[in-house]
Length: 547
Image 1 (tube, rainbow, N blue to C red):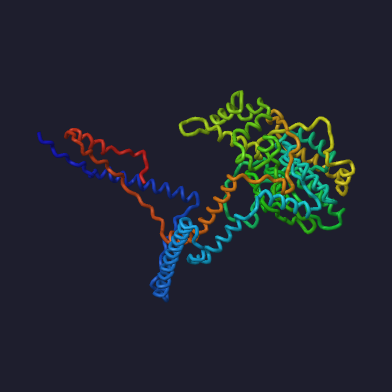
Image 2 (image 1 turned 30 degrees about the vertical axis):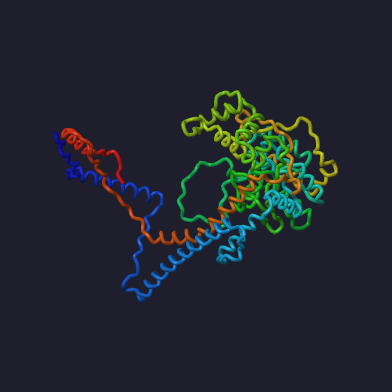
């Protein structure tokens, strides 16, 4: 029997249906325009071109055409240069005996970039640069502020750095208890009483809502946001008066160096004193990489310094909390487990709202399920949960605290004579009053809502460059790879700029199309099935927006 010839489904539709689709499309476009208007986005205006009444119209059009040709020629030339360089590299790889002098000379711009990248590759270990910058800050300072995290003040003190300050001559050392709003008031008072026996101590809380330097926002209607607890700075007047009293006693302008371990808030303190976001701050560790001089007034200058280098001989929890490279060097689960082992498990359960756990791996699994961290397939992302906990523990939002030692013992690098000299020139009575006022104005968390943490004691740091361990080969390969990526990005920068200029000339147009009708299958079907398919195609879902 001969197969019947199948008819293709017709694309014709009723006027009622067509008009309804067009209406839905217009409504959708109107909604998009309203949303764009609310967000402040405007459709780019189309270039009207040169009007006929403009003088020298032909000359302007000719100049525009020449400019376009020059851009195209420049792109072609750059493409040829890159091809030549790739050919030269292949020749050098295949024939290592060929001298570079026999090859064609490279262009001047590429030679400059290559020399720049060679200089980058020839740079020394960044940790050694940090040590050099830290020594410069200590030598140039008359007063050194050692910033401590109030959650673990003893773990933020570095005996090697304090000993270098004592040996540096007539320099004053002042302790600054930053992030004091993250610990209970009773614990803060206990730490203040413990530390002020040895050195002058200032209670401080850095401000967070600071405008960038040189940026003035005008005529902008900003939405009101909920007040953040760290927006107001506390302890600034006390620190100002302490530095001012020493400057008056000193008799001339002073330089104040700010030192400390990563993420204790050194740059935030300087921004709070200056009342501007003049130093780079952020959640990630090690943002400050070189010394930065900030002038507060004619008599006081502040110097920001890079972080102190943590010795690898410290405990695992200390490396996880104080070293910015700990997560790259150590596995995230191991680093977060070391932190968790020194915290009160019962308070951790209440803080992170997870069920009771027996080991760190079980805790990270429960935390991943609680925070919705899943891998492909639905299994909990244990490593992501460990990184999340590590970032919260080193950030400025999680409240935990340590108890000070039961009996006070001076540090081994201090004696009674040195402690007396450190306190001379400061108005300690006024400092005590300002600290009491700061503690009263800070609204710290309750002990039940904070996590009790067992401190590991003083953190050993590295001052001498010879004590810094050599980099692993894997780390060096990563740095070389970064330098190579920088070279490739430099080569393509001009092309990207040219592409951006060409794209800016093209106006953005909104296009829309009607939904395509599904065609009947070419397989053998009966006439009745064709009719049913046509009726199903006529069904239109008006609850969806068509673009």
